[in-house]
Length: 214
Figure: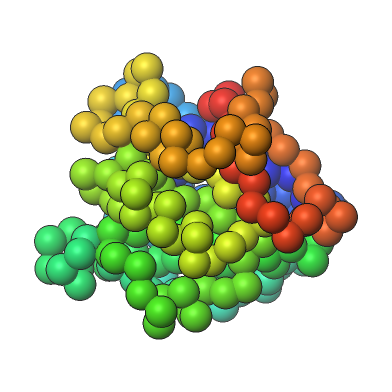
């Protein structure tokens, strides 16, 4: 499978036969425009402009924006309800976590998760091979809370998202705050915006992959 980072919290996941899903497409209000992309489906974790711009995705995709199970050719999609803040949604509402199974790999996109790590939530989202996790704080979990999620989920691959970049207008932290919590030998900084994975790439030891926005 192929994972492409399109900026902010947006990824395109493509299964080996070509079926694709875009997660949390954003509007240019974040400070930069989303690249042109097509997909068979779009998942939306919550109804905020930086996660719910499905109009930016071409190909007449199916839009999945609530708790549900959905099957595409070669792709199984499931979801888990969570909260956008530490007050059980009273401040920013609910957040949908999406799980994808592609080519025998379990990928989890945490959306704008804002609640503290709990045993119940962890049990609901396991197993996870690839974890797409927000790390910027302010509107989501911060670097230290993200580290706790990583330590408890123990995925093979972690790809951070929702952090401040050069053109980002949001008041969130840079990715360095998160990366610096790990030993340098388990962090891989890529010069490109994608990675391709198969079951053989899952070593059982957690690796952080930092993808560059396209």
